[in-house]
Image 1: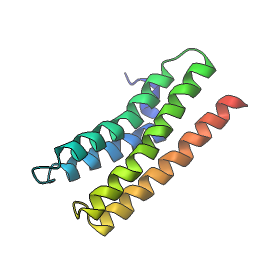
Image 2 (image 1 turned 120 degrees about the horizontal axis):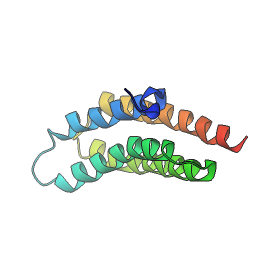
Image 3 (image 1 turned 45 degrees about the vertical axis):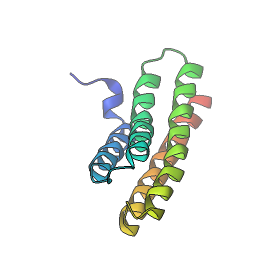
Length: 117
């Protein structure tokens, strides 16, 4: 039996994003553990807050967790930019990850807007 949030496309995409970050940060060289750790935490926070928000009973509670999730998306952007500048991410990986974040962000905005209506 699946939890309701597991059926949400935005949740599935957020887990895919976090998984992709895990794969890419495994190859970060020694000395960049701080960046790998922060990027992994922020990326996982996106899906975790979607899941936690879905378990809340009131719309304002759910909305708050979805907003936190959207904040974690914003947190990933400068972390990925630094990884790109340090040549830890290829241009293609950086673009693909950023595109994934933009899509997840739009979907989350839709969830938030639905709760407000």
